[in-house]
Amino acid sequence: MNYSSELIKGTLKTIVLKLLADNKKMYGYEITQTVKEQTLDKILITEGALYPTLHSLEADGLVTTEIEFIGKRVRKYYRLSPQGKIKTKEKVSELADFMNTMKFLLNIKTKTV
Image (cartoon, rainbow, N blue to C red; front, side, top):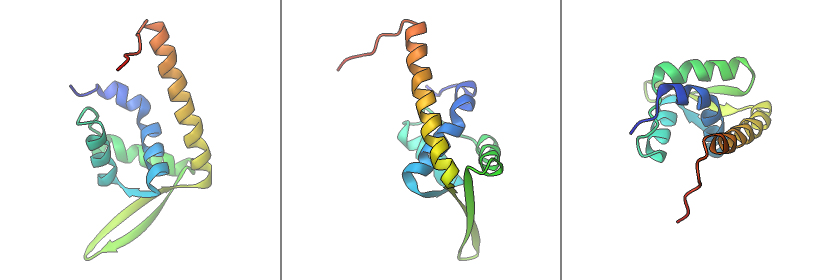
């Protein structure tokens, strides 16, 4: 089961920021594939959703870019700015709190193993 694009849209900035925090720098395709692998194909990020998000994060000063030449290809890497590192902590904390609130609101019991 894949999650709806509505759910992903609301969390995409947080997902990207956290991945960049954990991996120092990443390029677009690498981000989509990492999310796909780590979520066992439950979250599939399209280029049409990812690149506007990356551009928005860059415009907000949360990520910086660097270009690397790989043979004849150009690869654009994204990394967190100092402001992005601070914002990542805020966004992850906000999302965690939101998920706890939703569990309470929807009366979802946490599964124990």
